[in-house]
Length: 177
Image (tube, rainbow, N blue to C red; front, side, top):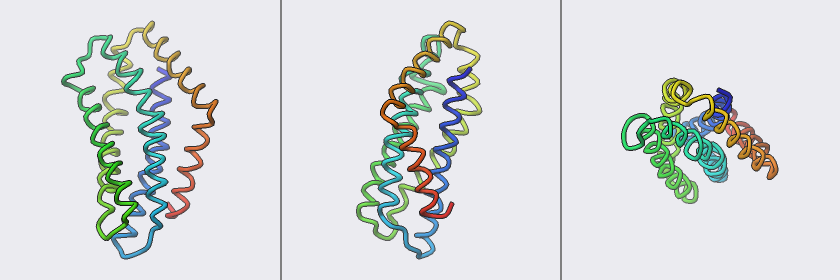
């Protein structure tokens, strides 16, 4: 199912930023310096790409198709993923606040976000996406793919993918990850 391949490819980009966040927080733990702008840029990536482009496809398209195919939203895998998306948003708000202060210990939101997203991505890649491929009918798969293509065209028109890929590369470079 092509939309799942798109989501998994986006996961790989998100994981690159998670690695950069982990390297940055480790550097702070060891008494090193990390420019607060690094964490602000990471927050911009998270909000714009991970929570914006990526979660829009998951929540706005794929999860809806899975619900139409009979999966519940109040419990089970979709409920867990939605709850973790909300938890990630909470970490992101904290990360931005901490970046703006950059006081000792304020990197906990970066560490929490990275840990949450690593296990979240593993669950989506290993459980939810294969489940989606098995429960969504062929006609629904066509609709999901068309919706993804529409979102990707809109993003491409605004050069969003290029902007966030460049930001991911910048974050990796800043901490040498």
